[in-house]
Length: 473
DNA sequence: TTAGCCTTGAGG
DNA sequence: CCTCAAGGCTAA
Image 1 (cartoon, rainbow, N blue to C red):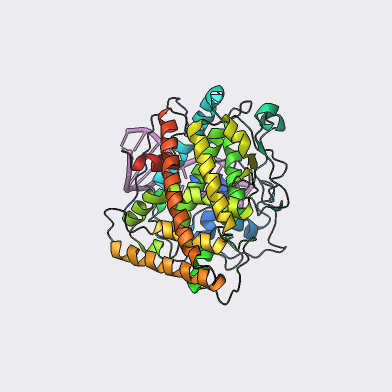
Image 2 (cartoon, rainbow, N blue to C red):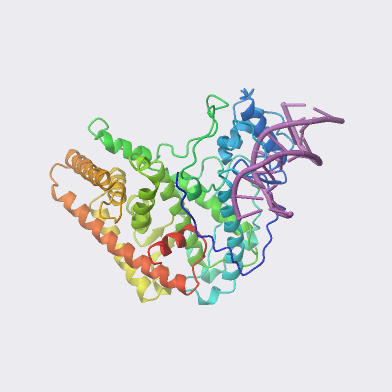
């Protein structure tokens, strides 16, 4: 297995020394003692997880499998405790089947990267506080009241006074409540679908310690999807939809990460809207990588080819993610963010320079075009794969396979279109036109972002920058 | 069984 | 060398 190296320019200007102090165990809220089985946890949950997996223990919940797990009550229900361990992302495969002691495992680089990211975020938010005036987009922030997290852990450490924006800077407002339900799914901590573990295989042959009701799936059925004529839908379209992440999950995870960023920062300063957007984009990129990595066909490719494909199309997918959100759930004249917040487009445009303003205008036009066509979730899912499987990427090892994949996706999309709107043969051509406009826009957006990166205005050392710099070096 | 402390050992 | 996440040990 080949690992994709993340350039970790560890030379951070500020000599932060990592201290687990202050971090709370995502399972029970106790003090963190270090990285254990994939993430920062306390000593007791580390031991509990180890015992459970090593001895293949099975627990039964006496209640309704929703017991609170905190420091005081964690002994009460091992079933719910283990469930929570899995839910927050503890890795079964980090428990060694052979019980070998010492040494390092393949999670080492991930821990390192996680540390680097945490440091970088501190530095970033600290630094952006001093750059506020020079940013074209000014601060706003995340009110917490609409984002209720069940589960009772992860106490909100952000004081309201700290997140309340100053009136004139508040351009991110609240999403209309009817669109996105307020009952978010269970709290999920941000997990890093890091490049470093692309090739991780389970070391543990017997990696299911409890039989059912464990590990809530990353993707669940989307509340918004309403597939027309289920029986007539091509099989591959169904398959593509199954790969598509759930908007609500994305929302809660992104919100959780932004919250995490914020809680680790100087609580009396707000990062710029631009850097918040960069963080959202970075988070979305993680989701895109995770989506691709676990998707049908793509996961069969060699990792080197996977990387080449993603390096080629990440910005297209990122932009399509934003655009499809506007088309499916958005409101005219405003930008709906992945977090469910809304920004008035006029507010952004008035603060943006000419480059960004023209990008926004063209993006708006594309959204308009796709809205008129009433492009649906099924078609967007196909388009994503169409973008991903680009046989024109150079130096592909499995070029033939990717070529046939693209043909197959095209065929699927066409079949779907004909099955839903037989009168619109031109629809397929229209969609392909939109795809090429998307390509143009993403390329412009990349240039714009790179320019701002060179002016040191983009948070560095993250996946966004990794991708941005990959083909320019 | 739990959870705090101890020992181990590959990788930096 | 040192680090630090693995597994191990043991008193509650």
